[in-house]
Amino acid sequence: MLLVDVVSAVARQALVLCGLTLFLEVLLPQGGMKKTARLVMGLLVLGALLGPVAALYDEGLALTAEIFVPPQDNTEEIIMAGGRLAGQAADEAAESLAADIERQLSKFVALQDGVTDCEVQIQLASEDLAADWGHNWGRVTILLSVDERQGGAAEIAAKVRQSVAAFYDLSEAEVRVSVAEYGDG
Image 1 (tube, rainbow, N blue to C red):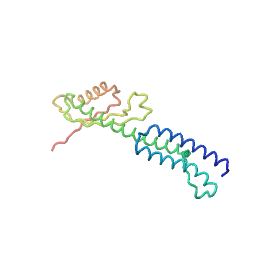
Image 2: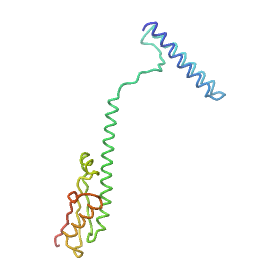
Image 3: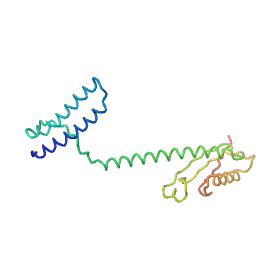
Image 4: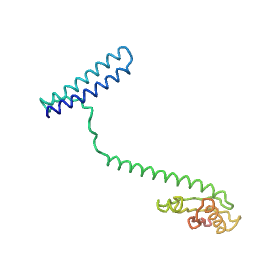
């Protein structure tokens, strides 16, 4: 370490610490706390002044109070971690959205005439398809239990398909409706 480097390091650290000391002097209230703060700041100034000087004599034993420590460049790691977190958040949001839509659709379908029970499943579309369609539903699959006294199963399924497609602004091709059939016994 050259003498010029030592002098510039001492001067830089002394200026920063003296400025910090003056700023804290103004902020501190009167009393015992002010005396303690002055002592601590004085020790920091002494450490900052003696650290580079000690570095001249022995690099291994130097006491430094470095204020300007260069940050580690881990930008790529931070960006990758942020990307992973964003992906996880998007996946969780998509799963939550699908569950909410399935509950809403189940209640909507249950209101249709002739429907006694239903199960709804939403398959979310890829982002490319979502941009074209205006929503991210890939396909809606509905399994119905119907009361055939209020109409035929195929007729009820067609009405449900039309109602869901119209209400949610979907094409009928995106809505798949099946009727559960139960055997005797």
